[in-house]
Image (cartoon, rainbow, N blue to C red; front, side, top):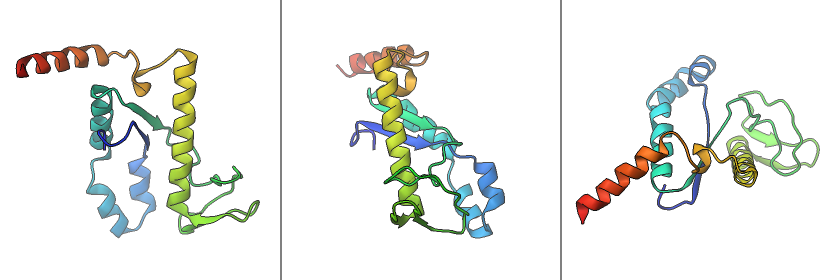
Length: 144
């Protein structure tokens, strides 16, 4: 994924609440994946390869916002299709949320790079980036 894309945008998940709110079948699927480790590796590899990486806050209402017009509405978990009462847009709930996460991530990355306060999520100077550059440089020199 890192080699294929210029940036990765993910939503931070509250796995503990997901386990309480879902049925037992979804609980098993949620527990099968180490979300923290997966996001940590994505972040590390993004920085290593000078790619953009951004985490969307878990409180961003990605499932409640219409990806077409921006209207916000309550969405119970059992409702799997997003139907906007404002513009009539109809889409799978998860696809709508992913489009909102993508838009918010791109907006945040543009904001952070134009403001000059680029952090580790936008691949600027960070506390971990200096030692990763050194580690990468040493790895390249060892190959030569």
